[in-house]
Amino acid sequence: MDGPVLRAQGLVKEFRGFRAVDGVDLDVADGSVHALVGPNGAGKTTLFNLLTGFLKPSAGRIQLGDRNLTGRRPEQVARLGVARSFQITSLFAQLTPREHLQLALAGGSGITWRFWRSDRALDRFSVRAMELLDQVGLAAQAHIPAGTLAYGRKRALELALALALDPKVLLLDEPTAGMGVEDIDRTVDLVQKVRQGRTVVLVEHNMNVVSRLADQVTVLQNGRVLAEGPYDEIRDDPRVIAAYLGEAPADAGGGDAHVAN
Amino acid sequence: MILSKLAARPVLLLFGLVAAFALPWLIYPPVAMDIACWALFAAALDLLLGFTGLLSFGHAAFWGGAAYAAGLIAVHWGVPFPVAVLGGALFAAVLAVPIGYLSVRLRGIYFAMVTLAFAQMVYFVVNQWRDLTGGENGLQGVPREFFGMDLSDPFFFYYAGLPFVLLGLFAVWRIVRSPFGRVLVSIRDNPARAQALGYPVERYKLLAFVLSAGLSGLAGGLYAISHGFASLHEVYWTTSGQAVMAVVLGGIGTLWGGAIGAALIVELNDYLATAGFTETGLVTGGIFVVIVLVFRRGVWGTARDLIAARAARRSPAAGTDSAAAQVEAPDRQEVTAR
Ligand SMILES: Nc1ncnc2c1ncn2[C@@H]1O[C@H](COP(=O)(O)OP(=O)(O)O)[C@@H](O)[C@H]1O
Ligand SMILES: [Mg+2]
Image 1 (cartoon, rainbow over the protein chains, first blue to last red):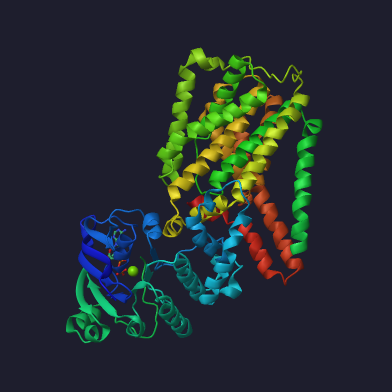
Image 2: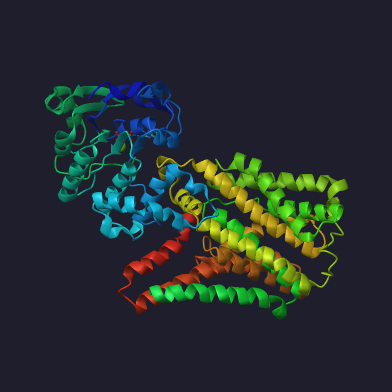
């Protein structure tokens, strides 16, 4: 774990005068698992949207290594090695999981511009696609439309899609939200496995998950950084406890804590 | 189920081909040619509407623009008609580059409005540039040159023009089932997700727009050659509307549905016109409303759903298969809602 691989400085996002992200500095150490926590509405998803180019910051700067990410488009950010999952499951309802992963894998190859070829040309990515599906426990459902999958399975597909891009930095927005205990354990194991060689930033309400995964925790409230440090320090920080008590309690049991984006 | 699906494809294809070749025996040959041209136009529009999720309300610019371009090429250069038709298609594709560039970044109704506005500009130019286009009189006297052969009989010309339509329909089918087409469907279903996977969504939409315009132009150019003139009506907004209507009637995102919808509309218009009916728009509009209300997924889309449902009932074990059939028959509500 060296210097920051992902760095935000003075990030601000204003929605019609309301500052959803209000001057956030964030250093994510290379190779770490970094958790973002905070009550609903704290600005975590907005911060993810800024980091991945889905929103343009009102002020501030984003860097990946020594590359400037500020103002880049989402597809460029993805190509540069920052992949994300979405808090609200975001899939292609008509495509099967295998087709999803073929698309994720084919993106860099230029083959997807070839409108004169059969889509069987995408089969060259099938082996890797099935490996990834196997990794997230989706191999058995590889051939049914993603729209018909159960909720937990959709979350797993979200994760597999982000992984398929083989990113340097993986941003996961509430990967375990709405999952049962079994799926949560599977996801935690998976993140442990895939963190090798990459950096993971994770928004997570489940403190049990945070304690198992995170090297570093940043607490956000009202768009600002409230506290930062290893989980054990953060847990006992009176400001953090107060922030959570002012809102819905941080449940440790995997309850469904997410609200609309 | 798999077997019946495998068998159904060639049977349907054969049926379609037989219908295409038999058409001028069954109906008045010039109308048959109109149907063929409009079938391609509708399929090309469905590439955008059904498979990319873009509702263009300005495709008359490409159909009509190509009609004039092909007509002018044929009038002034006297080249064989296939060259004129292909020239028209090329013109439409080139015209679509700036229009598409400026409109694909817009969503939903805004995209429809802007494409409509561009088409109205094309209409304005064609109407004003009398020296070139003949203005309100249209471009008259477009020849059908083909190495001195006599193609004046519409019956024979139908078979001379049909290969372009079949080629165009094949192209639409190929595009939809290409790696590129897969990306288009993903963009239609969820553009943000496609971006997160690294796809420059607007560039894909632009290429889809240009391809759709070029194929619409292929149809429009052939239409002008077959009529022997290009009229202002081809660039008028009602032509854009009729193309959208054909796709919706047949079933958005069903590819062949548009062809069926086009056939219904052209045939109905012709029937009403020969019956001396002047308010054709009222009747076609009324029928349109009824069909859209009764068959939510269009004529072909609904028929296909029924076939799939029956097949699924016959072999209940093939549950995943019928689910796979739904992949090809996406829920229209969802697409049109975007
Ligand atoms: N597009 C938007 N327009 C206006 N307000 C927004 C927008 N996106 C988020 N917000 C607001 O910004 C705040 C932070 O939201 P969000 O980042 O989703 O919080 P979190 O993910 O931490 O729960 C909320 O008050 C939310 O209502
Ligand atoms: Mg959130």
